Length: 87
Image (cartoon, rainbow, N blue to C red; front, side):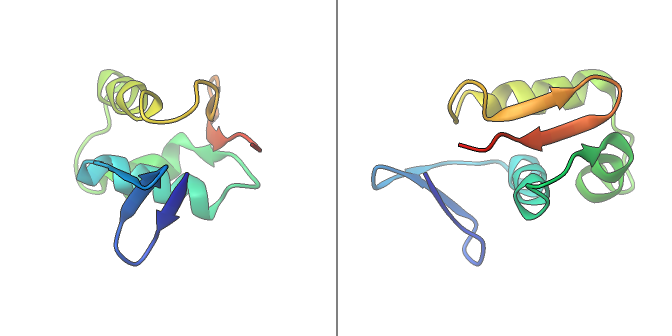
């Protein structure tokens, strides 16, 4: 996998993987903070901004994003937040 922050493009074996706006924001937040847990409050502030982050919306976003990466790349720390695995 490679990710171009400037152009918001995720590549895997020279194939572009399409990401939605929310997926890009969520993934970049985890990527830029890859050595720590990104809390639910940070996700609310950065991804959803002025909208309400519901549990179902967050789960759906993570589920759909996980389908585009290796199975255990996005780690959930229950009650705390998310982080990227060291691959």
